Image 1 (spheres, helix red, strand yellow):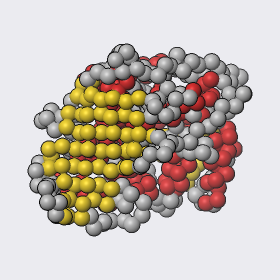
Image 2 (spheres, rainbow, N blue to C red; image 1 turned 60 degrees about the horizontal axis):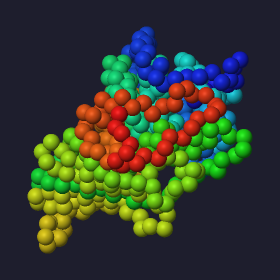
Image 3 (spheres, one colour; image 1 turned 180 degrees about the vertical axis):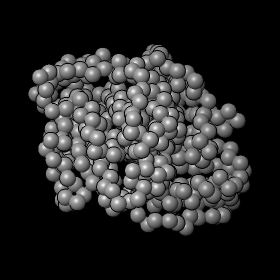
Length: 441
């Protein structure tokens, strides 16, 4: 993300260099979580990553955040592309100046836009909703600047990114800063009730898990003659592994995180799988797969069978099953609802009743964030948001290489997917992975 035009509009920023930098000390960080405790001060929000008219969580997250409590206002915006920022700014102004007050001088465009926004002392909270490949750099910079953070999922696309985020999450704890994750099911009342039931022994001892995220295709931005390679890839970030992590990381992470939740945030020790590219084979779809199947194994021998697909014309299925010695919990995300049935006879033992707020989970996660800031009790979701990201990356490593990948191998991988430099211009697309040929690194 960048700033308004400077004397060097193509100034580059390397994630490799950025991750080597030491964490700076922010003098006012200790005060950050308490300044709004009384509830009367305005919480000023900065949005980093506005999204395109075709899609983008940034716009939705900003709308949720400003409606999550009184005296919450969008104050500044940043995006790599001016058209993205202008569209989102225009869309959000309909909520009035008491909720959206983004002056021209607080709009930043370009590769350094996030830096300029974070330099605004008036900004208390930032929303990070750029493509995931930028997340480790932006999160590190936000915490260094002493900002509370809402961080969209996933938080990295490779091992070096995961390691960076783990360190940043610890810094956020030390500075008493909020760090709320976009893994929104954790904030859904029905899912909270369901997983509490599982943790209370509702299915007995877990013996196996299965999750499915078989969906249709998503949006795609046709390439225009004026687009450089870099611009085309970032505008179509879903389809490039260095930006999205592939769809089993960017989208299926929701399902994998629910499985981690069922296992009390214990993570698998190894994974193997298969995947490929059968339908979306054109160059407009970058270098990601269109289907993945992964078998994860836990230290106690429990296995998780995980599959995801993005192919049009196929049946959709987004559901989860937690199988135990006393029952099987089936989660249908369409409701959402959950039912526990006895093994064999299929007699219903329990069904979700729903509890808590009737609102949607996207709003609820921001309500929790704002309430935590107001109460001086910041939330830090860093552990599970980072490890669930690594779980998804481990699965991709297994499908891309065709090899068994352990948790430690994935975490300590040296493969940095980011390009040599971040600048508009030529950028070749890596070859599509070939299981059995593509090597782990």
